[in-house]
Image (cartoon, rainbow, N blue to C red):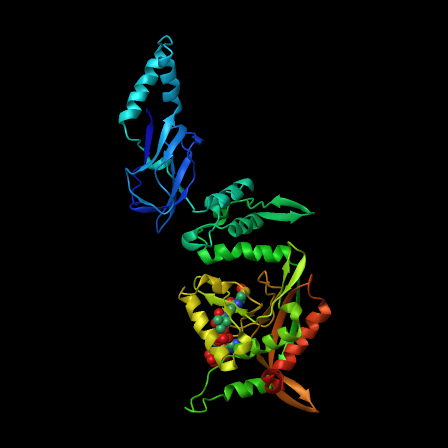
Length: 420
Ligand code: CAO
């Protein structure tokens, strides 16, 4: 039978690479340049296009196979060949076009296809379903930052990307206009740099939160004088060594206690079913400032830890983030997040909720203040906090009660409150 073999072309660095997708089926009619398979190396993915058009007779490869240049991908029954053979079989009068086509036939019989590197589409990897989904939304998969292994793009990445590209104006969704009236270089020297990968990934999530969640931020001050005295006096009972625990460990413990009292804060909205999901676990997220960008890992089951254990978990987890050794799953499945800028400085700010959570606690740097108590002035240690919550789930009164309760947990009776 006359046919065309489609082989793996020369792809430079791509050697012994895995097939992660077969994009066509036997019996399918394909056009020249239609993508046949996707290959994935450590660095990137490429789609291998067809060099001819026709009907696929037999596919010789499957997902998971490792291939090299020259390996057979599939056998194609080319339209030109079949049409011309029919003509010749029917003894139709020869003409110039037919002669040329016969030449083509002979050429295709002996020549291996040559694919120029420029015709290989270097692409972000994504499953055919995700590609179709992106296409339907008018998005180009290669422009979407992938959160999966080796930058693979998931359906959630496509959704986040689309959300980041549109803005809601008067109830209508509009494409963002990002063009400046004058280019920046008109005003002086500039330097263009890549946005770090972590920021590329968190950007759409932040836009989603800021545009979709009606935020309310409530600021408050907590007198932590006694707690701070206790914290600085901590030492190991057996070794006698000073135990260094930052205020964040106490705040985490207080937050767990507040989440038990106010379950609306340990919740998520199920928009599909229009219901509230109440979580029975206490996994506290905390924002970590790393050279690669902001990360928000979780301290799992913080309700089952004492303050020293929480302090150790904070140190260990933030180190894993800074060394990029943290498991991706640790960024998901949280109850509520703490964003502490206490080690850096500043007082109040507006923390952005980390969806699907419904609240976030911002913590500033504690400071001394002279306070009049029983007609005497005393220096007290004050902790500024900023609580942002989703107003669809949490009312202002509940937000205020939550802050008051946190104040009690970290205030002068902290030892009693945090022990229960
Ligand atoms: N008030 C006063 N001092 C504070 C404080 C507070 N609220 N919180 C921490 N400190 C002190 C600590 O006690 C420590 O003091 P010593 O050096 O004397 O021991 C010092 O500040 C440094 O603390 P730390 O920042 O290393 O540790 P932490 O447990 O407070 O925080 C972590 C850990 C990971 C949250 C922090 O390192 C970090 O990355 N913070 C930035 C988070 C961030 O970027 N948030 C913004 C998100 S929105 O863009």
